[in-house]
Image 1: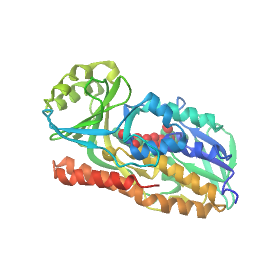
Image 2: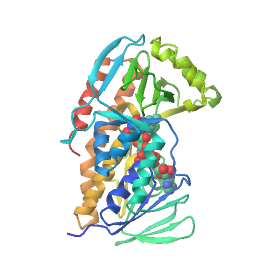
Image 3: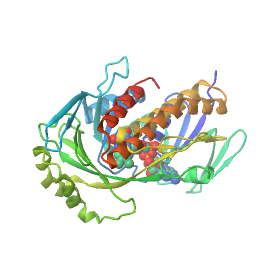
Image 4: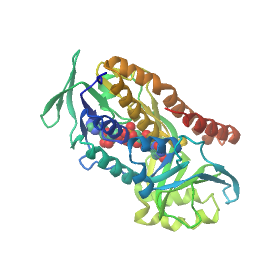
Length: 377
Ligand SMILES: Cc1cc2nc3c(=O)[nH]c(=O)nc-3n(C[C@H](O)[C@H](O)[C@H](O)COP(=O)(O)OP(=O)(O)OC[C@H]3O[C@@H](n4cnc5c(N)ncnc54)[C@H](O)[C@@H]3O)c2cc1C
């Protein structure tokens, strides 16, 4: 059976868009990818890779590189604010017949570079610093005009332009917009003390976490309840993060305070939002994937993972059906429950954290979610 598409445009070169490009181009589909950022480099600290995300990276063919440049581990420690160990968990159930680590971490720009190298290696035609001007759908094709005046025709357009997607706003005006959740996250990249050899959380009135991202470094995050619209001068970010760490007397955390003021800490403050667009995620020959339709808060550390998975599943369906509409419906059916689970359970975890609520319910949700997410996609 021939594939549903022979020429595809991917708009947005984040993890979801790059995965779609890789999985289609390596099977002989002609793929153009346009990315608005001329440098094609996301900012930000580390990113946590769950077991299912590692499985997806293996499918994309970059797990070995990620393991080499990032950090993989199996267990997960939970401490009191004073640093007493509450529990050590074997983080995640096995997700594959292959022996994969339970999870890991990597610097976000490093992961993006590994993805970008693979995207080019499979002969995707990557164009940076531009986007679409117009998208015109026909029964059998989509005509696209780009901002540099060029134009081309495709069998399908894959919209992976992220949470604030212009394509979603223009082509799917009924779709909801991202919803602020009144919780923010502070992140910093720090040198890794010798005793930090696995992801660790300290649970107090708020939550502090660290995750190794290489042989030498880790990233730290601190969750904070704060009004979404409040502006904080970036010059004050190190002092704000140090203030929040003040309620966590654990010695290892306190030794990190001076480093928050070093330039390499690269502190990032981000009010969080989420988004779950109801099906359908496609209209004619334009389909949305990743944060464009299922953007989650980081409570299950699975947002990038489910975006990568969605792109893998989309490619599988496009390659195994000859009819675009059938392939897109199958894609949506396979992805809806899993993406809904991550967005909604993450939102519930956020609510529990914001009111210092039931820690048992929190642990139960995390445990059950990881078991479900370990199932095959
Ligand atoms: C604070 C925070 C921490 C997180 N931590 C984790 C974690 O630990 N683990 C995890 O798995 N997930 C995590 N996530 C979620 C994860 O970052 C996202 O789910 C993931 O990056 C989404 O990838 P994407 O490719 O779908 O979208 P994006 O990463 O948003 O990519 C969209 C791309 O499209 C480009 N673009 C935008 N508009 C246009 C346009 N008009 N034309 C062309 N290009 C365009 C953008 O420049 C960008 O490159 C976190 C999220 C947040 C906010």
